[in-house]
Length: 162
Image (cartoon, rainbow, N blue to C red; front, side, top):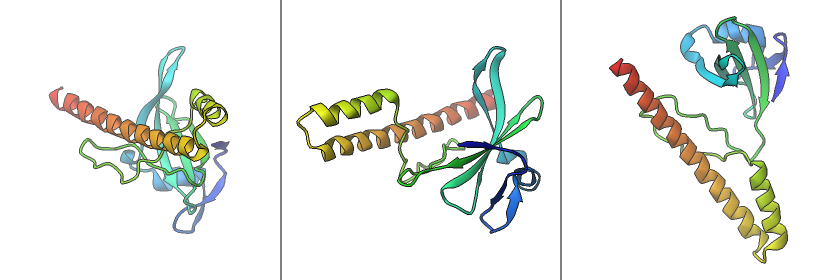
């Protein structure tokens, strides 16, 4: 992920070159194209932003736009998804069916340490260690997807009751 200025130019799927600022005015007029999420807690409480994810002409590059809810300040991030890593967005509605391939969660530091230890000390074949780790990461990604969908369903029920 690389933070870029508003005059950064990229190519959208239609083959048109536009800047980040033009993308905001042309493509993100409708509020349903943005998703409000917290960026974590700060010194003054939760930091809430509206996020938008735009595809580019490249299947591996995307533009992530962050808009501060109070000030309207925009931040642009040009993202790269490496080959071999599937890009699976989280669910956006409670009844959404799961994707056929959930992708993989990113490796954590403890997981990398465990892999290195398994590859250097265990008498198991290396392909088996790598295969079992990939299996675990895929299943963790699927589990994360279903948890997010369940959270959406709970939030929808709460708004209906209120």
